[in-house]
Image 1: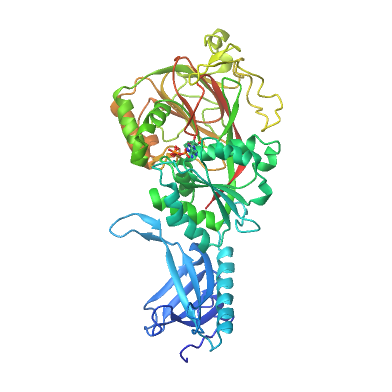
Image 2: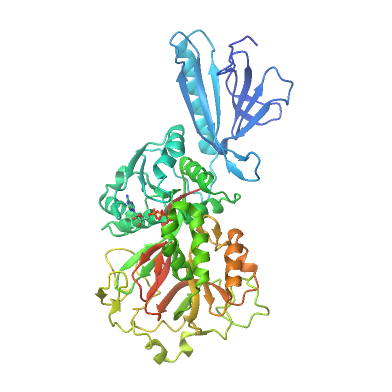
Length: 556
Ligand SMILES: Nc1ncnc2c1ncn2[C@@H]1O[C@H](COP(=O)(O)OP(=O)(O)OP(=O)(O)O)[C@@H](O)[C@H]1O
């Protein structure tokens, strides 16, 4: 074949795989190197023409491709044109076992004829074909596909002070380039105060956006979710796809989304690139939200967790170590372990339908947590067995005022959660906090806890795989609690094992795990910390119920 000749058009390879295009192009840097390039429905194959068959052959999977662009030569005397394909395949990091998505750019020179326009048209034809074939190579879940590029693009909210204060540089070094490669139109909005994102989305004209993406920690997404749920049109507003690019120190949701793809764990900038890749691919799934009623009668919506005791204390106390990034949780854990506290309170829950203890509670044959669902009958009973007087022992109940620990303001307990509210769904499983829990709930008899943690995503932080079974849309809350009596060494062992999700396999009788639809927590320890999605909320009784798939989330 003549130099600078391109042959392209529909063809069939000898192995019978239907091809879309075949062409021969020169290397964009070295014109002596030529490639035979073929595009099929699922791959772009590049073979150096001088090599013997099989040698120097590269096969790029189109499911790893985020975009392809055509361009003219910089030198106006050059009649050649170019097309560049951007892939992010999983590759092993040099000198390491970490498998992470890494950028690969393939650029080809098209010099079909001595006519710049004809060459550009050919380059554009290839670019279009690669983009279309890549778009067909999206992973599919529940048949839901979403294109972030059309018609108007994404609002990208960035908190410059999140994590180690590097969100802006993470955007410019990775995300900006990826969005350009994938031709995703975006508008960057930098928050300048707490609740800025909440105000923005509460008042935004959402018809202008295809998705709301945050580059920050989980706290900024908490603001966005609640800003949307505060709108008159919340039912429609919460349908806008939400996405997260990790820029915080915890990055629990980002790590969870990556985990749901089935890929091996990655951290830091590798996790950012993985989430950026998912954003460029634009696949959306449903996301569970949990409606959390606070003592004051306020309701917030949560996508991640509610914590009380050890985990909440570590999260808030370790804020001062945020300059060290994700390690802050380990530092905070060691500090809090040194002065381990017991927290008194009452916990009750409505088991999920697949929680095995629901219908026939029986003692576990061994304290192993591998079934993930046991709760010894010596420590649990249903609300029906429960003397009413116990319900009234809590001074925070029965509509009596509750003390807001952060502001010292006394705020009255509200209201029937079943009352139709203007904003958000009705919580049909909950009764007012001033009333005893319904009779079909399970009440934990023990009242001395080291921690209570309700999770509805897999990760509590980038390196804490707390609920390995969790999924974005599941309709259940993974409720963990650790009872008093656990030694410091055993608690540390649990947290160390959590890095790979191994804590559930430990023979730790103090760790309990249930799948629930709703729960109520009534602290009796007068001072303490409760967090929702890592953000501190008012201290006092809380109850919550899950709403399956209420929101939508950019996933992979
Ligand atoms: N420009 C800003 N200056 C100060 N605080 C901000 C700003 N923008 C947002 N915030 C607030 O900062 C808090 C923390 O944000 P975020 O969770 O996103 O980051 P992070 O705490 O560093 O992350 P992580 O939760 O992973 O540790 C949130 O409550 C958010 O409302």
